[in-house]
Length: 205
Length: 205
DNA sequence: ACCTGAACACCGTTCAAGT
DNA sequence: ACCTGAACACCGTTCAAGT
Image 1 (cartoon, chains in turn red, yellow, cyan, brown):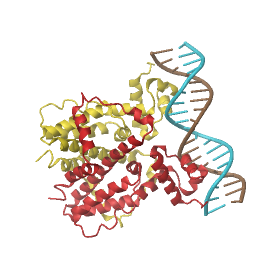
Image 2 (cartoon, rainbow over the protein chains, first blue to last red; image 1 turned 60 degrees about the vertical axis):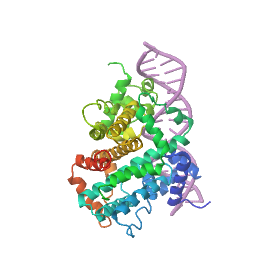
Image 3 (tube, rainbow over the protein chains, first blue to last red; image 1 turned 90 degrees about the horizontal axis):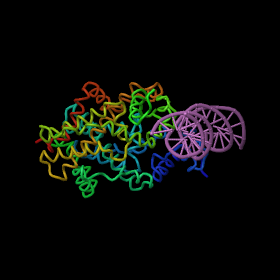
C-alpha cells in the first residue's frame, strides 16, 4: 500500500464525487474510501475548504494554455468559453465545485487573464473587454450548473427524484413547450446559442 | 409570545441570514434565535431543504406580476431580468439561496413562464425564445452570485478575509486592470452591459 | 514524515411525552 | 395543535501518541 500524498487525496476525492456527488463528500467518508483514518487527511490538506479549492484549481488546469496560437481575438474568446465548459464537465458536479470556491486559484486567474486578453485583441476597448470576459464566465457557470443538475437528477437516489413534483402545464404553457425544445435541441447547440448572443456585437461584427 | 407558524419561521430565517449569512444557517441556531427548541421547527417545516425551497420561493414572490402591462416584448424581458436581480439582492445571499434549490417552486416557474412569453412577443421564433429566456436567467444568476460574494467578503469575519491571498499582478496584468475597471464602473452598468449584449440581435434589432 | 485513536463541539432528524 | 427533551447517527477539526 503506497503512502498517501496530496495528489492521491485529490484523486480519491474526484473518484468519490464521481460515484456519489459533491453533496455526499465528507472528510470522514473520503478518508475511509482511501483506507485511512480521517485524522490523516489533515496532514495532507489544511481543511475541507482547502480541499475544495484544490479540486477547483485541478479542474481548470490547462484551460488557458496555448491561447497565443494562431486564432484571432474573437475566436479565442469563443474557444476559451468552450474549453471552460469542457473542463467543468470533465468531472461530475464540476461547476458546483468551482462555485464553492471563493479564493482565486491560479488556474481560475489564468483563465480570466486569457479571456480579457482575447477580448482586448479583438479590438474591444479596455473597460468593455473586462465586462465582456466576465459576462462570458457568468454565462458558462450558470449554464453548466444547470446542465449538471440535470445529470444529477438522472443518477439521483429515489429520495431526490421523489422531490421533483410534476409541474402544472396548464398554468405554465410556455415552460411546457420550453422543456420540449430543451429536450429536442442538443446541449452543445443550446450552449452555443447564448454564447453567440453574448459575443455578437462585441467581438464579432 | 405569539405562537410560531410557518411564516414566522421563514421570517426568522431571513433575519438570521441577514445577520450571519446562509452558510451559518442551522436548524438548531435558527430555532434558538426564535426562542424555541430545535425539534419544534420540524412541526412547521418538513426539513432543512424544504425550508430552503420555501425561502427561494419567497424571494421570487411577485417578480413575474403585472407583466401584461403596456411595455412591448423586448422591454419586458429586460425588465424581468432587472426585477430578478432586484429580488435576489433583496436579501443577503439571495442568489445562493435560490441556487441551492432544485425543485421548481411556483414563483420560479412563473418567472420562466413570463420570460419566455416576453421573448415570444418580441417576435423571436419558438425554439430561440426559450433559449434566450434561459440564457438571461443563467447570466443573472451568475452575475448576482458573484456580486453578493463580494458583499460577503466585506462583512466576512477575519477567518475568511485572511483566506483571500493577494494576487500576483505581474503574472496577471489584465486581471489587475480588470479589477480597477470593476471598481470604477457602477454595478448597475456592469449588469446592464452583459444583459444588453445578450439581448441585442435577439429581442432588439 | 506520516498515521492512529480519541476527544470536542457541532450538525439534521425523529419521536415519545407533555400541555 | 403545538412544543420539549432526549436520543441517534452523523459532521469537521485538533492533537497527543505511536511508528
